[in-house]
Amino acid sequence: MRVFHELIPLKTQECLQFIDLTDIIIKLVEKSQIQNGFVNVQTKHTTTAIVVNENEPLLLEDMKKILESMVPQNAVYRHNDFSIRTVNLGPDEYDNGHSHCKAMLLRASETLNIVNGQIQLGPWQRIFFIELDRARERTISVMVLGI
Image (cartoon, rainbow, N blue to C red; front, side):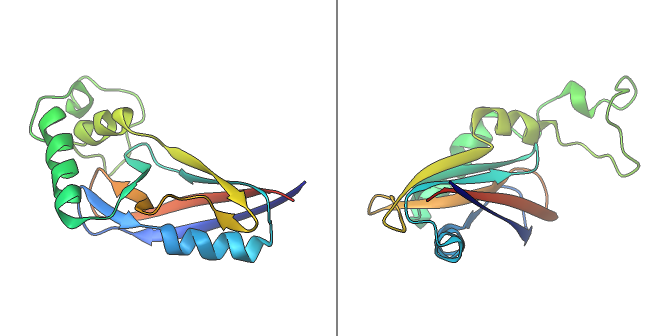
């Protein structure tokens, strides 16, 4: 069994931004030289997600609309009440309860099979990083395991 790991730095531009990582992940699997195994793509943040879905512009807009309707940004979240919150407060803290709650509905990672050096994606499947908060620097951890 061999292990390959790499971090992908990102700079997001906006809330509910879908970033297609598929081509980057394919290149990392090739770089790993692992022919059969798994690739795991994991976000290192509690206000982002990793999902596999179709990269079709109207569908992406639908998904954004659904996420926002389920967990509206302008709703009241106790996490945003800094007069009572005492845990995990940073000097640049801001209202982002909505992004944590959206993340709870999604996944922090996806694991995909590798066969003969190829990620086993269906014809329309793409690997997305989703920014659920605000524009900022982010990091994705990619681990490839196999032979």
